[in-house]
Length: 197
Image 1 (cartoon, rainbow, N blue to C red):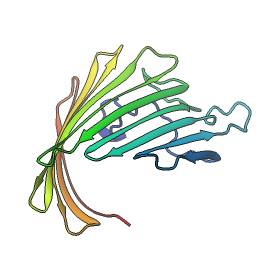
Image 2: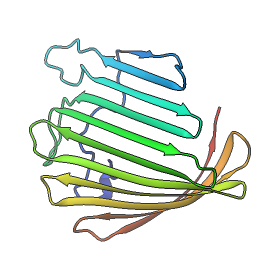
Image 3: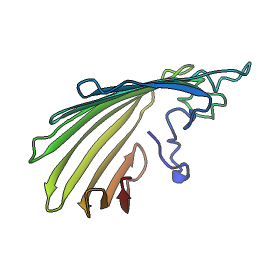
């Protein structure tokens, strides 16, 4: 989980791994009864360069009203920054699901992230729902991240409305309340437009 670096709370990324992997190979499975998976491996070709040799995998399942997803990642960190929960290797995983009851579509996900050289583990629980309303949907989400080994947690609550202009284009407005241990809560507001190509 990330907080903008200008927030001044000391809560950064759980571990600062790469956001993009160059020189990697990937394999994507065919669609097997609604199930698809992707595997990634990044080679390490430079001696002493720990930013390579990354491994990742994720899956999706779409079966009628049921949606399931998950991922696992092991990333090497070449230049860990200062902080209590940083290390040289990050491991993270997440599982999530949703079920469309037509009148409401609830979501649930849980994940963990940890690094070596530290006892701190980030555990995140998220619950949310989408309710059809007019030509769009009213959406909401609550999440809590707890840092085990550190007396610190973060809670966020987001609500918004997503309006469909067409089958491929929608506009949305969201408001989020954010609270980190020992800091005042903050509120953010955002609007946007999205087009699917």
